Structure formats: structure tokens, C-alpha cells
Length: 113
Image 1 (cartoon, rainbow, N blue to C red):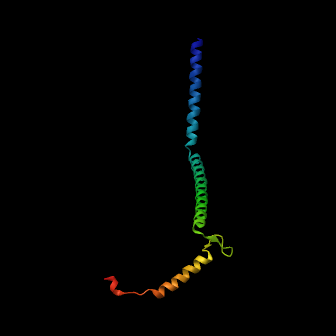
Image 2 (image 1 turned 120 degrees about the vertical axis):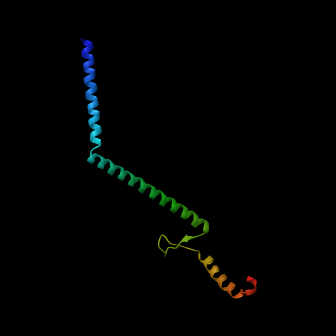
Image 3 (image 1 turned 135 degrees about the horizontal axis):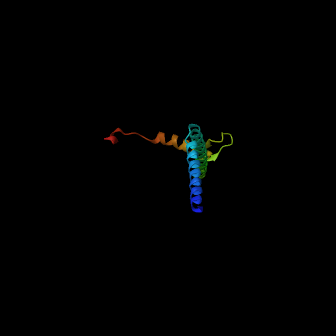
């Protein structure tokens, strides 16, 4: 008799457990629940995308600073933050060299043939 009572109780408990599990899964598949899950995933993806964009921007700024240092570019205090200028002597030399070389160059059409 105790054996039958044990198996009856075990079967009833398994039935209640299975019914509870099935009902939870059905609630997850309702349109409201699916919409809430999709919204949560979209918000999470938005946060990840924002973090990625911030990381890329920080890396770009760091690399730009490295390149500016390597090229000898510096920030001009009279210009906006995102505009860099060449140092004065280099810029003047480039302009002066450009003017002197143009007057000395002669073009010979026969060299093209």
C-alpha cells in the first residue's frame, strides 16, 4: 500500500512540475512577451553598438595624435579643436620652393616622343 501511495504521489508531483513548465513556456511565447524580449535585445544591441562606436572614436583620436606627432603637426590655438595646421617654417618653405621651381622649368615638347 505504501508503495502505491509513493508512486501516486511521485506521479502527481511530476504532473504538476510538467504542467508548470509547459505553462511558463507558453507565457514566453505570447505576443506581449515576445515583443518585450525583442525590445530588450534591441536595447542591448544599441548599448553594444554605442560602446563600439566610442571605442572606435577613442582609437581614431589616439591614432590621429600619434600621426600628428610623427608628422610634426600641432594644434593651433586660434583654430577649432578638430583642425590642425602645419608648422610655420615648413609651410613657407613649401610655398617658396614652389615659386622658384616653376620659373626654372622649361618644357620641351620633343621629350614626349
